[in-house]
Every structure is written in structure tokens, then in C-alpha cells.
Length: 120
Image 1: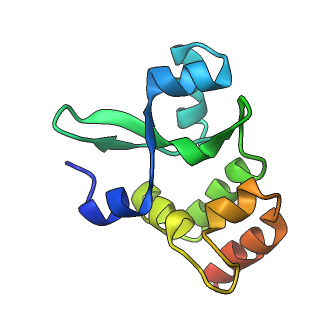
Image 2: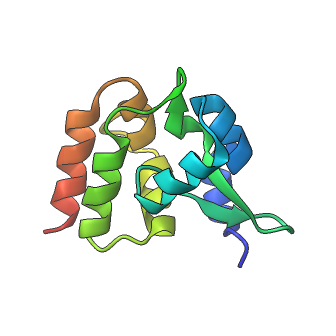
């Protein structure tokens, strides 16, 4: 199944698993492990159904601080991977920006507070 156009429109850049491995300085097996452990989220994209991770999840050779915890919060609130990605990349004027931008700018507390509120 291809990624919906809406998700592609929200996420500016994607990385294939080998590119994530290079960005993190690890091997492909480690990236697949991070995906299984839900430290990162991915979706399949394009004609070849390539496993892809949003490029914004990696900064300065590391996973964005707070991302694994946010993934857990959204999952606990009933969000599947696609819905979680959509939520993380949808602009929120009250943040401002997107939840992922806020995480990248070290404003994770407010993002997590909003994610927790989704469960109620």
C-alpha cells in the first residue's frame, strides 16, 4: 500500500533505511532494530514500496531527543504508525509549528503534554 498523498505532503523529506543508517552512523541491521523497538517510525513509499523514515527524526547523527517517548505516548493513545506520523507533522499554530519541529527545538515537554491529552 502506498503512503497517502496527504502524508507525503506533510513530511518534507524521507530517508530510506540505508540513509538512516548512514545519518546515525550505524549499520542497517541496527536501524531495523530501532524500527522494531519503536525508537523510530517508518512507512512504505513509492512504486517499490521502500521502507522510509522522516528525515526530521535524525539530527546531528542521533535520533531527535524525546521521539521514542512520543512514539510510545501516541501508540498508547491508539495511534497507528501512519496516524502518529500525520499528527507529528501536522502544523499546530498553538505550538507554533509541528510537533516534530518542537522536538527538534528542544520543546518536547509541551509536545508530550499534548500527546498525553489525546488519550483522554
